[in-house]
Picture 1 (cartoon, rainbow, N blue to C red):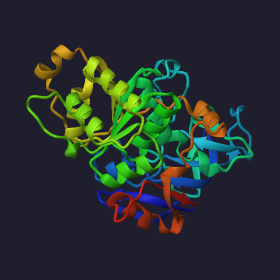
Picture 2 (picture 1 turned 30 degrees about the vertical axis):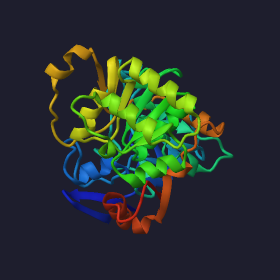
Picture 3 (picture 1 turned 45 degrees about the vertical axis):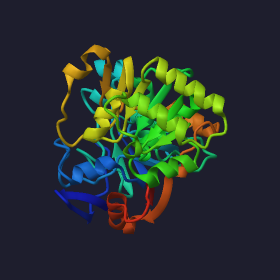
Length: 369
């Protein structure tokens, strides 16, 4: 079978691999119908993921049909439609029992990082009883393509922020995971401000009505006399075409009273976005960091110390997949809008180039296997 192989730094090839074989009673073989590309794949190609193994098939997002099952598999049967979790987890260790599955003693981010991933015709999934989620038979598989990673990551960011429906939040970055974060906030009734320095990304979020307000931080009126949240208030009041003035006033009054957002969800992954996140979070608020950084950042404790902030960071604990599937089925969540391009597997390297270099606007790409 053919697979998209991570050869070395900045080197990808479509290579021939042997068909996977079940070697453990807890494994399942999936025939992939759709896979996708993720920014984490770009981090691997740039040699920024130390645990990634050269020579493996990339890909950790995918949906497909079960073709073969190990003898311990009771939850699934051959022919079932499934979503693949980006995290492979045993379900039995201390971390799994506490829903900290990213740090599973026996697994973690394995697919497309340390073992062959989803960008191929077939994939072998370890710990399949816990690492797969059933998709109802009468639904199109493509609707659930992002459940196991991008959508789970967005929901994870919201959950880390302990956000409730009367809270206000900002989402820094309107890439695929940032958009999923906004989608989840909207479902939970949380008012948000979406930030991005890329006008196309910001406009895409606005066109799909994913947030209450949209701001390019480079357009803020810089002032040494104003706190950053005050600059946000000024911008919202002076640059918003929302006809509901009560909504604007109530939002700005809350932002002013509590001197920032209840939670800032950092999805952009830059030095500037990290600094914005802690500066925009209210005292005693939560900075929820979903982004993966490529270098060490400065943690300015003398400046932030008195704010009594809570920082929560890390790889996604994707334990809400069944709920996310249910909400998609109930039309409470829809990620179809994220798919701006679709490619056949034969053109996956061309797709990777588009996703990485953005020669035209590209949110997410569905790879039809």
